Amino acid sequence: MNKGPNTRLSDLFGLAGWSKGELARLVNRHAAAMGHPQLATDTSRVRRWIDMGETPRDPVPKVLASLFTERLGRVVTIEDLGFGRPGPSGKRQSVDGLPWAPGHTASVLTEFTGMDLMLNRRGLVGAGAALAAGSALSNSLHDWLQTDPAPDALGGLGPEHQLTADTAAFDRYEAAPVGSEEIEALERAVEVFRAWDASRGGGLQRKAVVGQLNEVGGMLAYQHPDHLRRRLWGVAANLAVLAGWMSHDVGLEPTAQKYFVIAAHAAREGGDRPRAGEALSRAARQMVHLGRPDDALDLMKLAQSGSGVQTLPRTRAMFHTIEAWAQASMGRGQAMRRTLGEAEELFVSDKGDVPPPSWMQLFNEADLHGMEGLAYRTLAEHDPAAATIAEQHAKKALALREDGRQRSQIFDHISIASACFIADDPEQADRYARLALLSIGDNSSHRTWDRLREMYRLTGQYAGYAKIEDLREEIQEALPKAPKAAKGSGKGSGKGSRLKGPGSLNI
Image 1 (cartoon, rainbow, N blue to C red):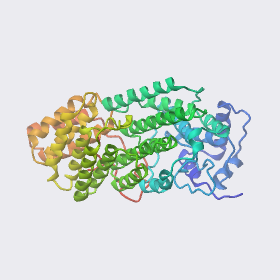
Image 2 (image 1 turned 180 degrees about the horizontal axis):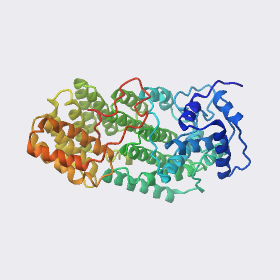
Image 3 (image 1 turned 45 degrees about the horizontal axis):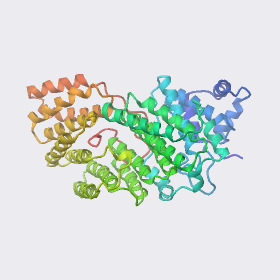
Image 4 (image 1 turned 30 degrees about the vertical axis):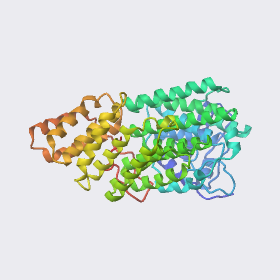
């Protein structure tokens, strides 16, 4: 039946620059290399896919996804091509097939990580897609996140889903059933990756995290006892959040957003709604960094409402600090102060009688003050009087920072220096700026460079000071050339489209 043109495939086909005949030949050649020599596609079939909305049979969708990924230098999934996986009848799916049907998360996870690894191996960039708007994500996921997954989603995949997950793998991982010892090793690996990220930034270990996540996706294609399956989903959620955060840290924004959504799905399939909410809060932080605080507020509303009553006070406090940062980016000082007050009350109300999950252990008192300093420093762009309070919180954060949190220490130094520049205290600003420069070269975080560029902008009013002139020269030497914004990365929302600005500060 003619369903009309496949506009997604048509758009990507136009970007790729192939002819229909050329794409048909590439599909046949690539399919043969992937173990399907019997596949025979011709120009007329390609025309029907594009112009008539015909969905090709397996393995063609994943062959096409692989071809477009390599051609465009960014991850292209089956959903991106307009070939959605079949979902439950009657369920509306509004953004890239979201929410995925039960049993499809392992498949999507394995496919996406396989594509990402392919880009890494071939030295491609992988940042050319558009970010989905926060409102679009929250609308599509709202009802799904409010409910618990069906028992069969927790209990394991049926044979038909096991096949789907396995055939989706582009870097096929021959997994076997795993036991508690193997899962404990995976959980320890997550902690190692998390500590490295906090210290050195996401650039150097991102590929390792994505590879580990790809392997876990293979493990999830097998049926395990419920208690092991929940832990595997927890590992998948933690690795996906890390992969997303590391991708965000090095400027791969659409890739990061996809990982955050995968993490939310994995957490929910494991029955951990607070973890799903925290994954979405990462996507919200990303939106503020990209100058889209309105989208961030949409995502935070979903994260807070969908996390459930079991969410610990400290986790809810963290959610409030992100909301406050978004409010500060919009110049809403009164709302920001009220939200930060609620965050402080929630933080102190957490008596610690319930051990925090591993993913919350890095949010401590230092991080609370760091986020408060960030919010006030961001507000100072609209209200300079907030700079003094920003300086106070950032100094408290710095004093409380534990060893191994080098990236956060760099952010603290830059926050203090920036606040001091706004507060007309160039002498103290110069001191803290130079402390940031001492270690920023050892960090792979592009976000530290973004923050440094914002601080450099503030030095302009002191261009006549000899000491500040020297500082400006040192900053210029320390900074790599600013990467060009990913084409289309500011799209997907009719709201704030700027990629960098006062809100593009992050810790």
